[in-house]
Image 1: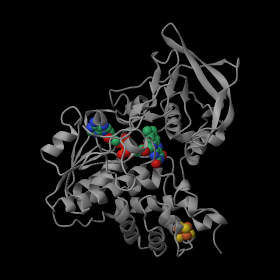
Image 2: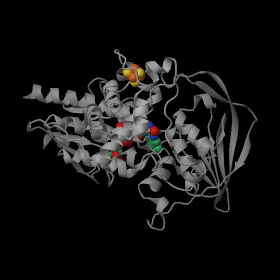
Image 3: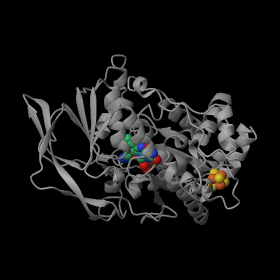
Image 4: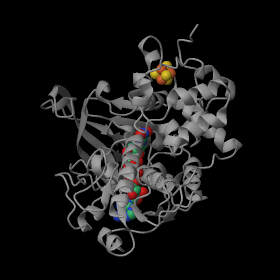
Length: 461
Ligand code: FAD
Ligand code: SF4
C-alpha cells in the first residue's frame, strides 16, 4: 500500500524559530528518507525528469535511496546538479519535478526536493563525491557573476577540461544565495560548502572584481579569454515611486536582506553592522523576497510584521511553503492593498497611507490586474518599511559591453537554448536574461550555455 501523504520533515517550532536565525525545516533522518523513497512508482516515462530544468535522473536517485545506496544517490544527482543542497532547500519543486509527478495525480507527490536535500546533507556528513574532469583543453573562459548561473556554467565548463575564472563584484561568491535568501531558509555554510566543492575542481573565483569598471567584457576577449559568460543577475531594486519613499527607515529588500545576511546584522554586537528595525514593520510585495523580508524583520526584533500586497492571496507569487511558514510565524497579510504615501513625524516613520484594490481582467502576466477603489484611502501605523516589489537587471556589464543587444527592460537578449548573445564569443544566462526568476532556471541556463560554449570553442579550433 502506498503511503498517501509525503513523509513530513521535522521543523523548528514557529514560536521558537522567530527568535533565532536557525534553519526552519530540519531535514530527513535515513529512515524517513527511505520511507519517502518507497513511495516512488519508478515510472518508465519519468515526467519528473522533464519537469526538472537540469534534468536530474530522479527515479534513479530515489531508487538508490530506497536501496540505502546514498553515495550512489548523491552521485546521480551531481551528474546534473552541482548545487544540490541549495536546490533541495529553495527550488519551487511544486511547480517543477513534483508538479508533474505521477503519484500527485492521486496522492501527494513524492517529496523529491526533500530527498535531494537529504542526499546533499548525507554527502556533507560522509565525505565528498569527486567530480571527473576531462583533460585540459587550454581554452580560457571568463565568467562574470558568481550566482547560480555563473557557478553552474563554470562547473560544467570545468568538467569539460576548460580553464575557468569567475569574476565576482561582492567580497563573497554565491550571488542571491549569499546576500538575498536568509540564513533560516538557506544557511550560508551550506552555500560555502557547495562553492568550495566547485573550487576543488580547479575553478578560480576572483572576488571584489567589478566588471565594467576594472575590466570590460571586450578587454577579456581581446586579452586573455576565448569566451565569456555573463551571469550578473537582477540585483537592481525597483521602487514604488510614491511620496516618502526616501525617508529614513524605508529600505529596499536588497539592502535589508544584504545587511542582514552578508553583513550579519543579526549577529550584532558580535558583528559591528546593526540594522534598525522598529516595533511594526511593513513589507510591500508578495514574492519570496517579501516573505523573506517580513520573516527577517520578526527575527530582528519587530513585534509585528505586516505584508501589504496589491492582489489577493491566490496571486501571491511566493512559494506556497514560504507563505505557510510566514503565516505560522504570525506575519499578517493585508491583501488587495497598495501603498500611496509614506508619512513621517519628527524624522521618524509614522504611517503608511494605502488604498484598497479590487481585481480586474488578467494582465500580460496572466494574473488579474489590481485596480484602485476610489476614495478608499486609509493609514497603517508603522516605523519601518521594506520595499520588495521586484528587481531590474544589473546595468553595468550590459552598459559597458559593445554590440550587446538588450531588450526594453535592459535584459541581455540571448538564445534560450544556447545563451548566445548578439556578440561573438559572449554568452549569457540567468536573471540578467530572463529577469528575476528562480535558482534552478538560472542553473539550467548556465548549463545550456556551457554546452554551447564548448561547441563554440571546438568550432574555433
Ligand atoms: P544572482 O544570484 O543575482 O547572481 C549574480 C551575481 O553577479 C551576483 O553575485 C552579483 O554580485 C554579480 N555581479 C553583478 N554585476 C557584476 C559585475 N558588474 N561584475 C561582477 N559581478 C557582478 N529562487 C528560487 O528558486 N527559490 C527561492 O526560494 C528564491 N528566493 C529568493 C529570495 C530572495 C530574497 C531573492 C532576491 C531571490 C530569490 N530567488 C529564489 C531567486 C533566485 O535567487 C535568482 O533567480 C537566482 O539567484 C538568479 O541567479 P543568477 O546567477 O542569474 O543571479
Ligand atoms: Fe517517482 Fe513521481 Fe518521478 Fe514517477 S514521476 S518516477 S512517482 S518521482
